[in-house]
Image (cartoon, chains in turn orange, red):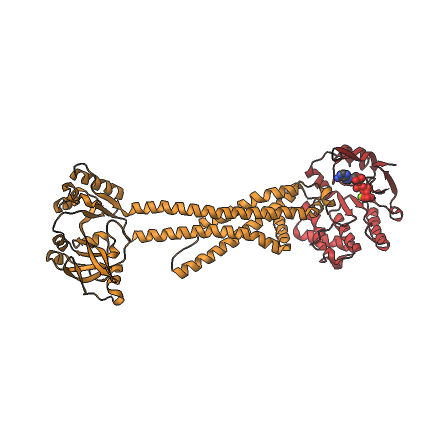
Length: 394
Length: 224
Ligand SMILES: Nc1ncnc2c1ncn2[C@@H]1O[C@H](COP(=O)(O)OP(=O)(O)OP(=O)(O)O)[C@@H](O)[C@H]1O
Ligand SMILES: [Mg+2]
């Protein structure tokens, strides 16, 4: 009896018990559906978040003084000269720009709210990779001429002016009116400023408002192909030298957030995956249960087969293939259901979720393993039945 | 030929019953020639079926030796016994023992499947020819539940025959049939015997046993 005959046999006996086969398979369908969907969604979600972070730029490094109270400390800030010199000293730096930060109270949607205002030179936008979603960013000329212009983050702009989206309005910052000339495109939050909720003004104006030229934050653009960890290390050691051995500035890059995120998402998908895995296991136990009932119910059939010359191996294989068929068919249906759901999710939410080949292999492989694992015992029971007793069974 | 085709010597079958044991066969010695038609008779519980199952290699004796065509098969393992059941012995039972959910043809195909030495197409041809031989060419697709008792027993005979075995073991094949049908079935077996097959028949009825050349009578696990 070859394998093909065995498979045909198993199929026909499963078809003979349609309802029972379907119900048994259901456990497997749900388990595999859960595991592939979890894998797809967690992977898709991860990619979504990563791609979001990639828009922040992976080649940007930020150095900033995170402690407000050290502002009185001489060693806790940089001078313009010290900042500009870094560009010459550290070869991995393509460009850099100091960032001046101040907070101001603005009436947003009828409530007073503290808003971050940053001042930067005109290359701030190039270093940070910010483009105008409407209007324009300020120019070097405007910086030099203390021009009272500002750019606003997209979210804040909507909150302030609603959907009218008209540029040219004025915003009062610390007693001075600034004219809105542009809206900054959406950016993921990184470092001390949330671009989406901030206002940018020329560095000259910011320094005048702050009453100091001290620099508490610098952002760096790494050269193409330069190692970010190396750049960070060099910036750190350089700043430590300046601050007399103290780490007064935090140095961060987007990729470290990414790697942390990667770890968190990994843990989440492992946890969810294990829960889904347990449901496959439960499905497997259901299959074992049904196979044991089936063996008992078909004792006479087993006797007849043995009388016709079936060996133990023939019987073992027959029942093993039956449970394997139940499991893999259930697994396949689960994957199909999962593909369907993921397609619906991605079209409804316009997110590119997809089921990877790995997820399919894991789903199918796991269900086949469960099929073999939980099928062996019932099949063994069937195979070792004594033919005479099996024939006498009523 | 210098040996008996079937040679049993001091065959015992002892069943454990709780802590005690029960000897269903108490040392049976018996020989049957090739091509013989033997009937086994005896009271219920005398051990006829037990003996038949051992001769048919469905069961192994507790002790004793069984030479089939000169070869000792008493202590054969499962695989070897399965091969003998498949190729050399055909079984016919009182309760037909057909697979209820499969057609006559599929039932007859069963031994061919397990012997596995001819192609799918050939198997179907052989099976339907065998069914034709027992007069069932019109009922290939019928399930057992769609056939009369006599027809079911013919399917069972076709199944026993399909691998062309040397021995047919029939345990009360007419036990569930009326006398008219019983004689039809016996005619088929007689015909098979004439074609050279060794037939061993268990029966309670004298007129059925009359088809055999030799009658063996049993009582309490022994031959009288
Ligand atoms: N598995 C078993 N365990 C214990 N005793 C058994 C077992 N199988 C058979 N026996 C006993 O062995 C004896 C012989 O049984 P067997 O089936 O061979 O009788 P039989 O001659 O075929 O009877 P019948 O004409 O009713 O078919 C009986 O007394 C039966 O109770
Ligand atoms: Mg009997």
